[in-house]
Length: 296
Image 1 (cartoon, rainbow, N blue to C red):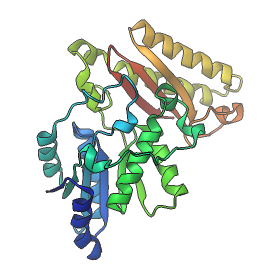
Image 2 (cartoon, rainbow, N blue to C red; image 1 turned 180 degrees about the vertical axis):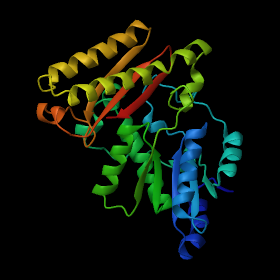
Image 3 (tube, rainbow, N blue to C red; image 1 turned 30 degrees about the vertical axis):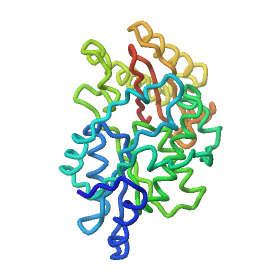
């Protein structure tokens, strides 16, 4: 696996494969890799084939961290990450430091539509998605990938990147990979390492709460004997899910059911009908803040 530490070196490393017609699959990460990241690398390999090139990036992006968040203590495990990427079939790693990635202050930034970026995660982490979209756009400009693979665990992020690519007419296919989970249902995340043993044992409760919410919504939609499933009934189910987590010691930001297409609340007709929905949750368990979602 080749490692490029500057923008120029990364572009130089891509010249020959691109000239030869190789497809380039990109997996952006912040490092501290786990099996979820490696599944994205393997999916990129499957998509580009043996003749294509799989590239990954490791860059802890200060722009997407808010005041008081964990930028300084975010785990940096570079040597271990490199070994894992090699084993997973990565060909090229872009690993810039801050001076290489942002040689001058990044005063030009991508500001996504607040109708999507200002809700849910954006409501809890002001400016977070500005930083995400800016760094992803810059990675796309540096690497010119044919496709890029992102996990569904960060559902809102995936949707924003898809819309950014569409609105800027970027010739990049955005590939969504299903959330990779531990055997007990916990969605894999680099921040799971912050959990104490007791918190780790409790952590799958978020997934269970979302699963119960999804099953309740499905049952209410399917039961023709009841009145049409409405917004008040949905709000009651969401409130019960939140109360259940709080009773277990969590501090939830949201557990909610939204339309998949834009993450807005469904209308009564959409809720009672066949509109594709998704249940999303974010909650703090001690210090770590965990995310998860399940499509309805």
